[in-house]
Image 1 (cartoon, rainbow, N blue to C red):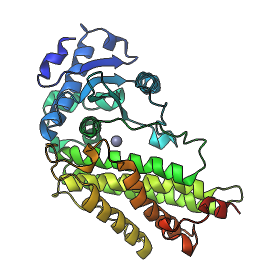
Image 2 (image 1 turned 45 degrees about the vertical axis):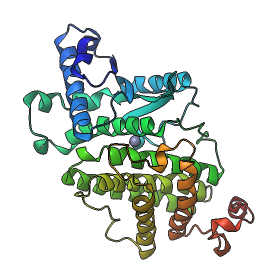
Image 3 (image 1 turned 135 degrees about the vertical axis):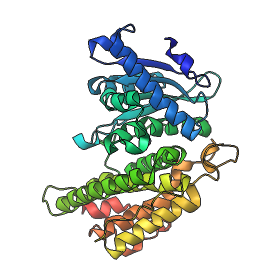
Image 4 (image 1 turned 90 degrees about the vertical axis):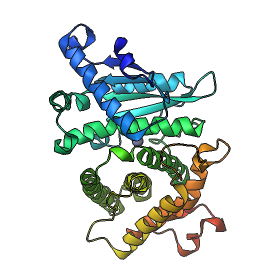
Length: 354
Ligand SMILES: [Zn+2]
């Protein structure tokens, strides 16, 4: 496809898995318009954030019904376990996903799938040349998503290794294993947000903070509801929902670490003192231990860029106690002697199952 020429320092394949018939015909006007919008969005993200060239080898714009198959094919090709693609509930349906693989030359390259509807939404503003500040928030989101995925590509490329097998989150009941998975997700999301933070404006960050508060409220409420339901498994719910709240918070901190002009994410106004302490601890860890020294260059080495360093394990060791403290805010206690994760002892799982 000759559209690649427009990305001279980049060389990815752009393709489509969409059901609009015209979009399968490269000569059709609709097809050309969509291609132009995709390229304009990517060009904006690439030029604003200076991502590592060639960290991404392929971008597919797909209809929602096609996304799962695209992702699974890539995961199979890369020899990665078919991961969990974020279907905890309809509201978490993924708008885009990045899958990394190690190439024959030993580089880590990523493939990105983006939901088609997201990009259709910005056809008009891109064609009109409307300045970004004047875009509605939903349209800003449509531009932010590809930038964020390119941020994952950048992070994957600098890390020089692909994350190992993932657990089956639907079946897994071991809270430590689930937490380890989310610790890895949190590290990856934090770094992708850090690297793509240049596309986030203060107003957009404010919008994302409000969205996080709203979503966190729902997720926490469902954990509390499980606690009072006879058939509930509140700790298992907490291992997903409360980690999810932490991951989404880490993304906002990631934006701000990369772009200090952005507002600082703080919990909702009626937050309990204990909740505030938990999010402060999380923020402190991210700012002091996980933020790379230089936003983009990758010249200064960072713990995430050493294949020998167990980044996910490091994040888990530091944040598992924070997650437990968050659980305790909602009456899900692990017992006082469990506060220090280093003291060993019985599996806390056995205790709460009694
Ligand atoms: Zn992400």
